[in-house]
Length: 632
Ligand code: WT7
Image 1 (spheres, protein in one colour):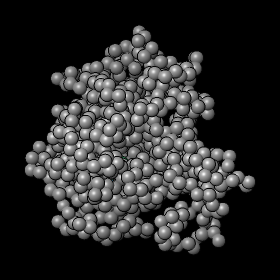
Image 2 (cartoon, protein in one colour):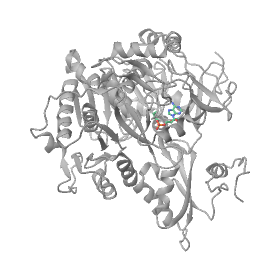
Image 3 (cartoon, protein in one colour):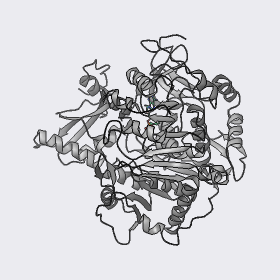
Image 4 (cartoon, helix red, strand yellow):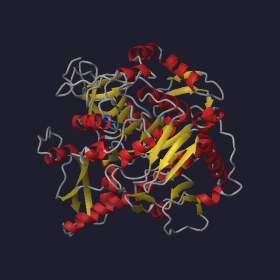
């Protein structure tokens, strides 16, 4: 194997026993089978591994591409496959969800218990007037009720729209308004490092701006006094104790192509867009990727340490592991609370066998030194995973050596909200190069293109595109099909544009470099420049704003903002603090700029578009590149 991909050229080969027990040991054979007959191969998996209420007529319909459809005419429900069917087997009484609170409380739900809770809440939602196709906004911390709420929506064919609990007023408002939810589910608060995030208060403020919501269901978590709006707000525990909360209701048979959820994510310009995923294809894609990449078996205790409010949590805390009948661990709090070994403590006490997290978390924990993990028995671990941004080789090696004891291959999975599941990723048998997500998942064809759409040579940087459809792909941008076509399928016709740049080395290994659009990854969280800029200009002192991402050792990148003040405003340090807090209040603490600079002008094109590229080059002391379109 050649060594040009990474500086040191190191290759790590998986231990023999890992290859021997892999669910999918032969990458070349299955990849080729998919390339020879994509629909046929996925069709066989869908038929053999899942239960359908009615078989589909056509596995892949590309007649209206890029509006691809999978398993057309099939009747299914992801909840039937993630819960109901397990309760008909020995898995009924095994733990489905293992939860640990930040204050060390523990709750576990067997498949049987989780199914009953989901039935009860599904019948509550029905009683609240939620019907098939209705959108329900869910805004909560990492507590079991978020999983119950998501599954309850899906069970009755309603469409969940989870908003990450770290988002704040305007971000929440925009997402409620766009989805036109009539019902919202939240909690009184969430615990974070011993402090309370006032979720209900934020919801109340968002709802003053978004009047579509008629009912708010509130889970009691933190227990402080909160305002309950008469006629609108109801306690979850009260509803769940009413006779309407039936423990056994049928799961709705929906079309494979019926919507399962919306998840908002930021793109190139404008407001965040609602990515739409469906029951059938998403179910097949998510379960199969998890089964092959992380070798997940029903005896595994899997911990995806993400938040359910992002796609990682949707696919790999909630749906994927339950579809496979595994045990999914969810931990409520911060990785370093109360001490920097909290995560390693969770791994040890619960006997976690596969751990999946983000480079930013690894770098953050690495800073505390080896003594914290070394204090724990981590020998239950078999495989490790990484997601969210490129992992730097230093963090990769620390993770490999100190956490995995050189026995656990690291699955560096590249994917997106839009792709639903893993797209470029090793399998357990793949030789690894630290920093590369290695090769496309079986059946996925990727390419790296130049400006004109021609493939670039080995190790040259270009646009990363996907050339084949896949079952868990997004179906559209909810309410805006033109934007779906425009954003993803127009730059290079017939190909899915990822928004990332990448290199491919001579072994065919992909090295993702980063976003080429106006998306900034802060601690692996995906933020759009537009959302942060509009929060800044919503403050009365700011006339114009531009934000860029600049590199940061732990968080990958952080936000740097440039503001033009309204005439007469003083550019004081105090105003910097006010504006930073304002962004945190409107969008969320993750979007808070690390620094704000007051400027008299912003570099713009003659048509008035801000040239963030120029700001970034200046901030990093680099060449500003082609300035021919800059307005002088
Ligand atoms: C963007 C998608 C999908 C789960 C979390 C993120 C970046 C994601 C990797 C990786 C390099 C990665 C890309 C991508 N990204 N995983 N393993 N190596 N970059 O989902 O919030 O939709 O973000 O995250 O830039 O486009 P998302």
